[in-house]
Amino acid sequence: MLARIRKIGAAYQQAGRVRDIVGILLKYGYDDLAQHVPLPRAARIPIFRRQQAEMQSLSQAERLRRACEELGPTFVKLGQLAAARTRVLPVEYTDELAKLQDQVTPLPFPQVRAFIEAEFKRPLSEVFSSVEEEAIGSASMAQAHRAKLLTGEEVVIKVQRPGIQKTVREDLALLRQVARLAETHLPQWRRHRPVALVDELSRTLEQELDFTCESGHLERFAWQFREEPTIHVPKVFPEFTTARVLVLEYIAGVKPATSEELSAAGLDPRETARRIADLMMKQIFTHGFFHADPHPGNLRIQPGERIAYIDFGMMGSLDVRTRSVFVDLVWGIVRRNETAVAAALLKLTQTEEPPSRAVFENDVAEFMHQNFYRTAGQIQFSRLVNHLARLTGKHELYLPPDLVLMLKALSMTEDLVSRLDPSLNLVEMAAPFMKGLRAQRFHPKRLLEDLFEFGQEISEAAHDLPGELRRIVNQIRAGTTRVNFRHEGLEPLTNSVERSTNRLSFAIVVASLVISSSVIIHSKVPPLWGGVSALGLVGYLLAGVLGFWLLIAILRHGKM
Image 1 (cartoon, helix red, strand yellow):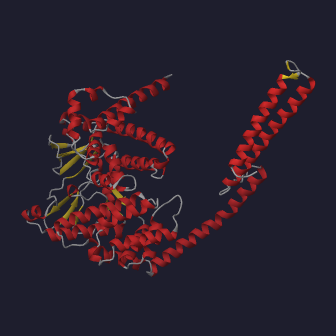
Image 2: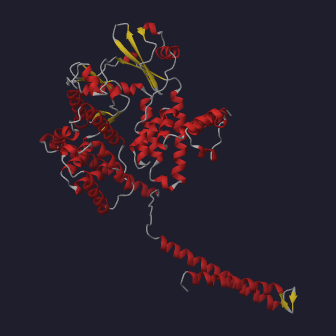
């Protein structure tokens, strides 16, 4: 009984969230939802109608972006993922969703204070000598406050919004239901894999909802750049960090939004751009662990053009193989080798059914002819990303999530450095790193490591083989072995056999009617009509109609 009450309560809460979502969508002019979902009363009041009229002046794509921002972090992240997957939505929508911002009004400080003290299980005064009540940043998932520890160190407290975990999980449960329905009942959406998209969203949000993950990201990032003088990684305070509160070093500096702002602060925009690009190349091609959201708001430039990152919630990771194949892809584009580019793309992507190699290579060649027959200095990563997404979407090839994050990070970095130094080209900056990664493949140490790993895998497989054979033999002895056959291309034969069987059965029924009617007439079973059994005549008539129907069906298919 208690479980049933809980289910009813969860369903009621979900229904409330659905009403909120529908209300926001209606506000932004999605009136067609009224035909499918019960409307909230707010949709009928004049003020709401005036808001709808104001929204009509916006484009469909802009209204969708604003609706996502108002719906909260789950839908903001969903929009960002959809923007990365250009095969899901038209280009004008993906371009608009790429602008998604997650900024909301901060919570009152007394509420924030109570939340932090509940997490720390002690008053703020026992941890901090001062805390600024005005938030220095506020998003739908968390907000940040500047503070000072009792030891005198200036820090930032990142506080998760109370109740956000519950809201996100309800949204994810609702989205998962919708995705399953779409994948089951809408064939045109099945190729977009909406369930996989929601699962990817769930993994991303679960990490962002646990600040200990961000703390781990920060520590790993600091370790890989421990000997790099051009970067400053903020210190994290693990003793004051929980799943919902993160305390880290306060980073002072200038946002690298424009070259004018950097110049006004006495910083060199060109050197800043070069260092930002250099650090991104090292993150991706040297370490394989990179900051996936390098927009100006997440960077600070300190004296001496030292680069500091301040948010580590969204990070990406690429193994050596993926980095090497990506280098092959870019190298093939620079060398204008369509076959190499097609082979690299097939290695990088995932698919349920491989595309026709000839057709795919032709599309790759056309793609390169239109966009990449130019010098390396003229190639732009952002253009490369857009065209790659269209090409893979056309052939239903799926880029792994971390590779999508890397391409997005490169595009954002290119956009940032081009504003600071238009003469700087990211492909030219990446060239030495890509050459180094290619050269590493043939380094004697790398070859020996690969050979050792291959031998180890062969040894483990040989060691496991006897056990696997014994398991198969035991299954055969126990009668639990099953062999599954799946036929392909036999549908026409199957349909023909079924049609023939049905016709034979039909003919047998007609013949039975004729025989039984003859027996009834011969026996003069009453009632009689002109000395003939009426029941037998009806049987003859029915047999004639059915026989004629069978003849028409055979003639219609052109075969007797």
